[in-house]
Amino acid sequence: MKRSIKVYSLCLAVLCAVVAGCRETVPIKEMSLAKADMSRAISVKADKYAPAELQASKEKLFECHQQVKKEDLEKATKAAVESQKKAIEAYNKAVPLLAKDTIEIAEKSLQEADEAAAPLLAKPEYGVAEKLVKDAQDKFENKKYYEAYLGAVEADKEAKNARTIALGKKNVLKDSIDEVRSTLADAKRYDADKYAPEKVKLAEENLGIAQGALDDMKLKKGLSAVEVAKINADEAYLASLKETAKKRISAAELVVENANKSAGASGAKDELAGANESIKNAKGLFAEGKYKEAIDAADEAKRLAGIVVASKPAQDPDAAVGKDRPDADKDKDKIADADKDYYIYKVKYRPSRRDCLWRIAAEAYKNPRLWRVIYDANRGKVKNPNLIRPGMKLKIPKNPKAVKAKGPEKTEAPAEEKAAE
Image (cartoon, rainbow, N blue to C red; front, side, top):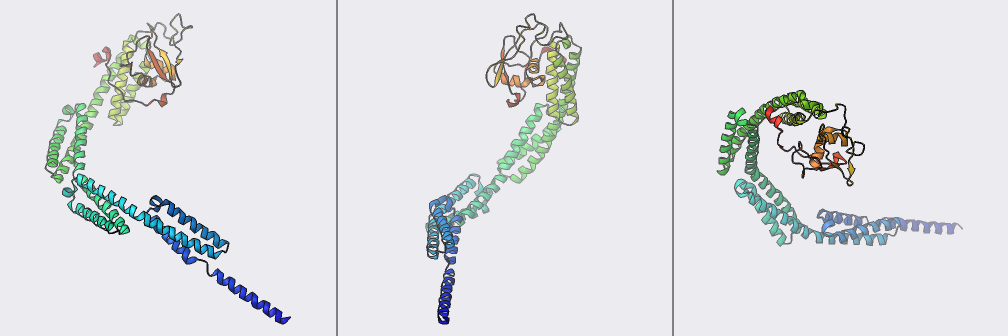
């Protein structure tokens, strides 16, 4: 009996040793190699250039893990070896394609640097880039694909750097000259020759110096001159804008004052209220230094005041739109459906209280200041927002917020406005 127990114990010990020995044969090395080669393949963008091979490698490595869990170590080892093999295939397929594409990118960057006059304006940097491109091409021809790829990456970087330096020396100066010219042109549109003649003169003189320096490739001199030109152009623009705003506000105040005293004040109450509010806004904006916005507000005040002055007095001060006509019950100027985006409104004839965009907006949106939404939607037929004719059919956007706002257009001012000026 004791002998049998000893034999059984011996067999058990041997079995344990075998199992322990089997556990030591888990293919750690093969799995590590597969994973390392897979990472190498990914580093050369195998997911782009060899996606099938890379995916096969990933699947085999996953299969290896599954077999380890099942303790089928032989199959696990085989799967790990196959995973490494596919990873190597992915790398070998991807790396020459990656090198070729990267060299082409570097060549293109070098060409762009050449077009930007980098051989002249960034000669040292361009020389480095040119040499690196040549080295990468040579390595590719010698099938040193990975080294060619790395060289091309560096070549591309240096070529872009050379181009940036060249553009910084030439095109930045040209762009600066153009920018100052634009500012000076804007200043002159606001009578800078009258309000800031010395600033205009200095800006123009230094622009001439900067342009001459650009033509002669004396870039340091040009950049210095264009900076002086910019300072003077900016100051001329600000001074002329301020004086223009002051003048426009004064002119608008006079027109609004006349509108408040005119006979049409009783027949165009909404426009009169808008004119008074706009002139108030113009003064506030001017005080804040927002001169361009102040000009726009003053012009709007004049426009509305001109409508008031041109209007006839109301026969019934309490009349609402459409209530002064005997056929009001039959035709109340209701806005009819046209399509899913617009209504159609037919402009009516009222001797005492004529239709205008301001009143139509008040009726359509409960906000007369949205008149420009209607104007923008009908620019094809309404050339002057002050003049809409009875019988016109206007499109009224159902959703005013959906209409992209357009900048104000210059329209012919009413005679009353011109007289006020």
